[in-house]
Length: 77
Image (cartoon, rainbow, N blue to C red):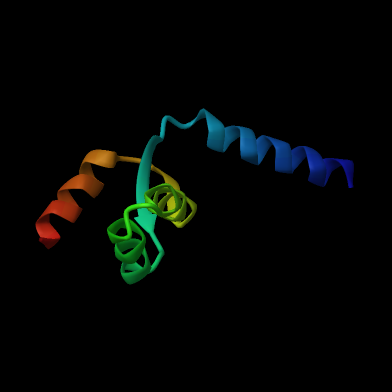
């Protein structure tokens, strides 16, 4: 059992040793209708800001080569 545990540690440390690029994306998963209504009411603008921030997701992904990913995403447009 100790050998399996030590193998797991070595496997994770090898992953950390690789020089990988980190890509951060933001996606918003809220209702645009609710957000616009909160902004248009005027007095509820602080509530709209809180609503926007709570529905904003930060997605971090590690990739081996970020330039290839960037080129692929630009070619899709």
